[in-house]
Image (tube, rainbow, N blue to C red; front, side, top):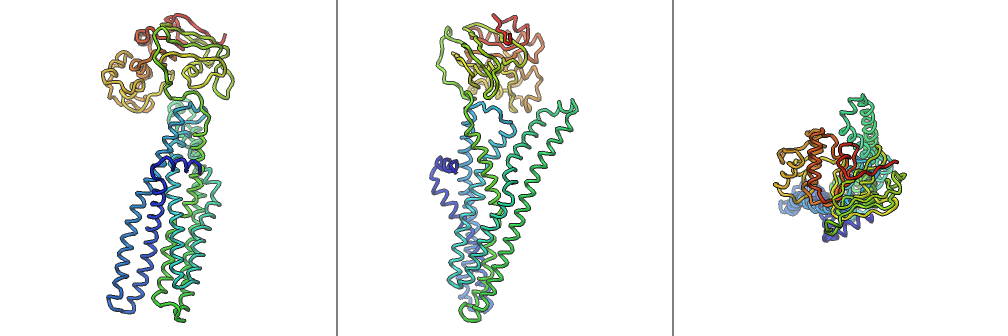
Amino acid sequence: MTLIWKLLGGIDRPRLRVAGSVLLAALASGASVALMGTAAWMLSRAAEHPPEQALAVAAVGVRFFGISRGLFRYVERLVGHDLGLRMQSALRLLTYERLAQTTLLGRRRGDLLTRVVADVEAILDVVVRVFVPLVAGGIVIVATTAILATFNLPSALVLLATSLLAAVVAPLLAQSLSRSTDAAAVPARGALADVVHELARTAPDLVAYGADAAALDRLIAADAALRRAEQRAAFSRGIATAIQVAAAGIAVVAALAIGGPAVAAGTLDRTMLAVLALTPLALHEVFGDFAKAAQTFTRARVALDRVQSVLDEPLVGRGDLTPQTTAAAASDLLIQLDDVTVGWPGGQPLVEHLDLRVGPGERVALVGPSGIGKTTVAATILGLIPPLAGTVTTRGRLGYLAQDAHIFTTSVAENVKIGNKDASAAQVVDALARAGLPVDPELAVGELGSTLSGGEARRLAASRLFVGDYATIILDEPSEHLDPETAAALLDDLWTSTAGCPTLVITHDPEVVARCDRVVRLGR
């Protein structure tokens, strides 16, 4: 609830929007009930063959309520969804801002994607599928009961009782029966997304090594878990719907049983008997989705709790935010680590008591066995994770060529602009040429660079350095996936472009090591 109040506080005129949504929903439902009641009275009165003038007001009422219920419902959808989408947008921005501040280690990508996309959308469900219809339904119950009570109190009390049975007891029963499975369905959807994401990225390798059957079994198991949760929810909803139908039938039979003797006794006008009998049918239609709304609330609450856990996640490092650095003179550019211990938060130290200094114009190779922690050192320098001990000092804007640089499913030009979002078309073409990748900037790149070779993807990633104004450079395996000639040409361009910049090179390639000024070895 705290999150909902926070989101409401961030939009314009929240009270007016909430009140407007509820009022319009109540008017739409009330118009449906009034249409049934008015039509029932008019038909009953018409059976007496009165003068046409006696039915004129009722005929106008039927037309008015028939038109207005559609109009009110349409406007209510506009206002309610506007409110819900504003809150959804605010929550999504809040989530993105939080993610941009942290590396958020240990979160599976498929599950995180589900939290950021599907779970955030739960706030829309809370507004348009839970809060607005439930509150509006309560208003219509009270109003309808009060009006019918002026004609026949016992029938109105029975209608109130059956309405509470259909609108409160049945939905709460459905929610209770499926609470555990509804709560499990949300993380189950995240688990399924994890498996699908894993299969999508690793399908060729799984097939090549004969592990595809086991992977598909995991997919089937995740799908079956979600399907069981949905089936249990549907079963519970079916029970609630049966109770609601029975309650509507009881209301109609009770109205006839109570209204008939009242007509015979002369305490109730005979034209009102049809009103008492048919109005419950329209009123109970209002409650048709209440059971689903109760189950939706359970899922939405779990989903929003999952989003809240992302918002409450302790910040790790600097995330993707660009550090606020001031321009440094060429002689002041620096990468320096003083007695630094690095490691992933919550894990064991990988490198301890590391002293490293890269001054202006220096190219220092950082080497060591695989898994020793070289890339972790780079992540620490970049601020993605904090050092476990010691001090890290950098001066000048940091540029980084990652070992597994992500290639986005968009054009080549947009991928290059990751290094400089304001780069001109000419700068993009120049960066591609310097990276040895003379391709059409508008060429579409497949998912994860699937339409590029390994070497082309590497050169595309390197072009981001050429297009940006970077003064301090970290290169992680710059020659990976490249043949010796292309690697030498790329390094020539990198060395030319980074002349005068402190450059830390993480590599296993002896040719790259030989081109560096000095070597720092880890693991000795």
